[in-house]
Length: 100
Image (spheres, helix red, strand yellow):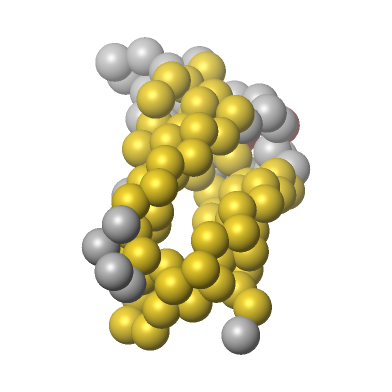
């Protein structure tokens, strides 16, 4: 998953809700990311990578980042829990927190 931004900004944190639902029954119906890699590109073209470990629970998970002049964030799932050829991997929500 990739997000591109028109104006560079300071990426303070990334907030992730893992899985397809906040309800336990539905949450377990899909695979959930366990480890993701953020590839963060800045306005000058430099790239920084951050490995994040996600808890296997349908709650808010905040990860502090602290990188200036961000223009793009790519999230790559490196491993998952509950995944199989018949189950898709789900992320419910991703939010990017900035500071002016």
